[in-house]
Length: 129
Image 1 (cartoon, rainbow, N blue to C red):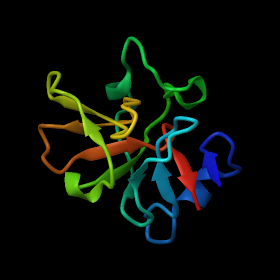
Image 2: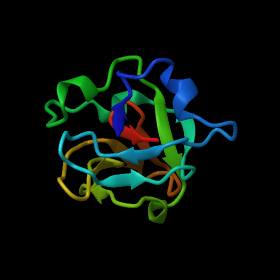
Image 3: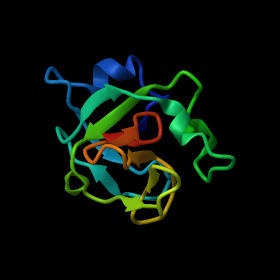
Image 4: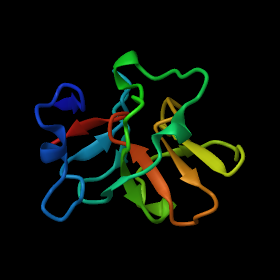
């Protein structure tokens, strides 16, 4: 069974284990897509600038859109840490990340000025415990 961030009670407590890692598999937020973005214990919770994901239009479900105060992201330091993720062409210094199976996105970004900066919004994902 999968759960969205908004459907959880105390989501940060449920999603982050004692080591600061994701306590569940991170999945694509699309209703019928079962794509695994990150496996359990693969990413660390960090705070970053959420405005980098503010695009004029998005195909994301309305309940997963980034809020103005959203600063929590799953961080990995290597693109090979992802199970499945797609990358856009570079826009400025940003590559947007999407679901590799259905192309839904953006769900995160890679800041090309930092080769070890790959992040997925915790609110733009579903979770499987």
